[in-house]
Amino acid sequence: MCRHLAWLGRPRTLAELVLEPPSSLLVQSYAPRRQRHGTMNADGWGVGFWTPGRAAPARWRSARPLWAEPSFASVAPSLSSGCVVAAVRSATAGMPLEESAAAPFTDGRVLLSHNGRVDRNVLPAVRDAESTVDSALLAALVFDRGLDALGDVVREVGQADPGARLNLLAADGARLLATSWGDTLSMLVTPDGTALASEPWDDDPAWTDVPDRSLVVVTADGIAVTPLDRQDAA
Ligand code: GLN
Image (tube, rainbow, N blue to C red):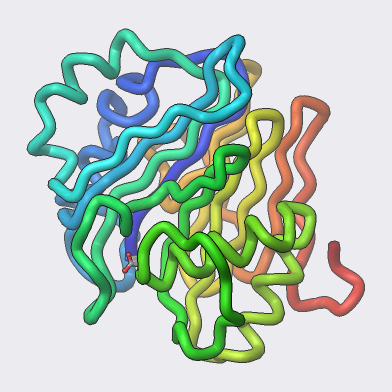
């Protein structure tokens, strides 16, 4: 399982979010604390983020381990954003090892990361997937259906493949959406903004665990956590 995180709030540098915390995504790439599937996340990484004056997110991905990227480490303290999605990858067996298989995926408007696995045969045909990796097909499906359908997509795919793990994390520049479906998800609410992450990046007691099978929606106005396994859930 990969590890991912997102931030919405006061602009912070990519180094502050991804590299510097004691259990940052960088540390999680070789020593995750809560990972249930796989032991390392060395099969690539990606960071997507919005900057002022540009509607489309910028994105930097690589098929190398995050710890082997001195150029990113050099530039990350100079890149700031108020809306970020980042991930480190542990490839599922049989999936391609390539930059285009690393999250976050994008359609130019939304960033999406997938922590988990799904049987590609249960997914409807999609156009424009970035890679044949299961996560890219799932991302293309969400891009087709729209972010508002994220919970519905996870419920439907989860019913079609009961063994699927579907922790999705998405952003559109103004909000974050996340699902917990088979793996860990934590949340940190601060006066400066909100973080969602596969696992806490430090030991701040303010981190809370999101219950399995939830949908989390974060906007500037607040946070909503709703159960995904109730028929009437959002
Ligand atoms: N199935 C995805 C991949 O192969 C995600 C894997 C993961 O969450 N570890 O990249």
